[in-house]
Structure formats: C-alpha cells, structure tokens
Length: 207
Image 1 (cartoon, rainbow, N blue to C red):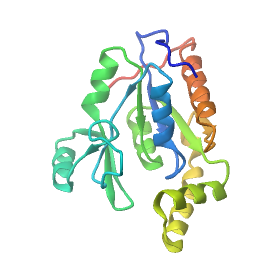
Image 2: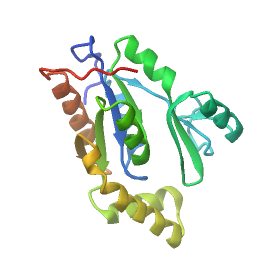
Image 3: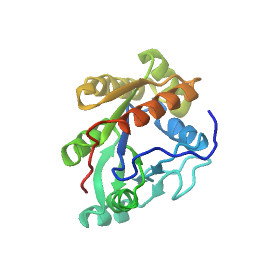
Image 4: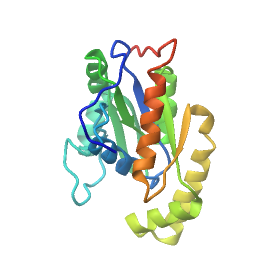
C-alpha cells in the first residue's frame, strides 16, 4: 500500500474503531502496518503492566506502568475500560480518545475480546472489527514463535481463543489475519473505514 498523505471524508462525525481478536492473531503487527501505510487515524496507546518486549517503546507501542500506578489511574476512572489478561493489566485511556474525537480524528483502539464487549456497552456506535486467525493451527504456531509456551499454557491460550471466537456477534466485521499478508489485512480494514464514511446515517460517538 502507498504511504502517501491521505485522509478519509466526513470529519464532522469521527469514527471510533475497535480492533480485537485472540492473543497471537496479529493485532500489533496489523496496527504497525496501518501506520506505515499512512492510514489517517489516531492510534490510541494502550497502558499495560506487562514487561516491555525487545524493541518496544514506552508511549509508542504501549504505555508501560507499574501495577501500583495502573491501579491508581483505574481508581480515578482514567481508563475507558481495563482488564487483567494472563496476569497483566491492560487499559484504554479515556482522555486520549475523547480528545482525538473532539479534534475530528478517526480513532482506533486495540483491546482483547472482553474489552471490546465492555466498550460495546459504553459506546455501541463504535465500529467493532474482529481479527480472525486462518486456523487454530496457525494461531498455535504464532504463539509458539512469540512466547515458546509450554504445552499446558499453549493449550490454555488456544482454549480461550476458541471461546473468544464465539463472541463474533458482538462485532460488526470480521477480517481474517494471514501471517504473511499484512497488506491484505490492512486493505480490508481500510475498506471498512471507507464504507463507514459512506453511511447515510453516520455513527455518532458521544464520550
């Protein structure tokens, strides 16, 4: 995809796009490629207490917080939604979303399926996109390559992924995420956003 400067139409009613899917499906890689492709979106930085992986940058890939600081912010309702996932906490900054939408920017957030369900209750007019692995086998391979999980932990994550895939009715769209076809995934998300901009009755996010 070209990375030329571009924009979507209808800034009067900016979209909130929620990307979700099981662990290992490629959510981070998809968002990185979307940025590289120049999709004109505001990318919300998720806060987390998990350890930083090699190459990750604080405030860019994630906002890395201690558990103490995370819980302080949670008590102050700093997060739109937050949850514990595999022993670590993740939260979506409410203020960043509000400011981006107020300035007319289409905004995208990445959450797990539980988080998507919470946001659906708070902001039902958001656009919900589920990234689906091509197969359980490929998802297992991705998890092994990323974490080198022991068999028991891998089985736990795959069982959870199967349960999460049963939540498809929460979502507006599903996009299959192929490991070596990131541009295809990005082009389909781009097409969804473009189609949403052509709605006769636009979505209106009130936050």
